[in-house]
Length: 108
Image (cartoon, helix red, strand yellow):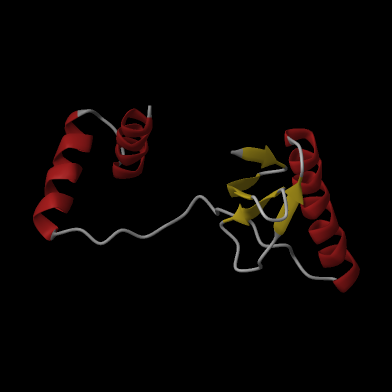
């Protein structure tokens, strides 16, 4: 996985016919790809793709897409909502704080 300026590159595959690696930037509606024959070329192409995308957005006067906003909605049952609220309250935390802590533990 490649990271640059908050963007993530992944899904890197090798094309044996063309003898080249290709990948894409994740989390965007806009399709951004990169390629290279060596790991260094792949990484440089990834960074160049991001920089070119950001420059094009600036020239066009539009805001670039951000891969993740930090916000998302989750639908849960009322019973689970209640249990989370009670647990958070018992730990003197907001539901948001409690959920963030639970997610951080889950991904470690």
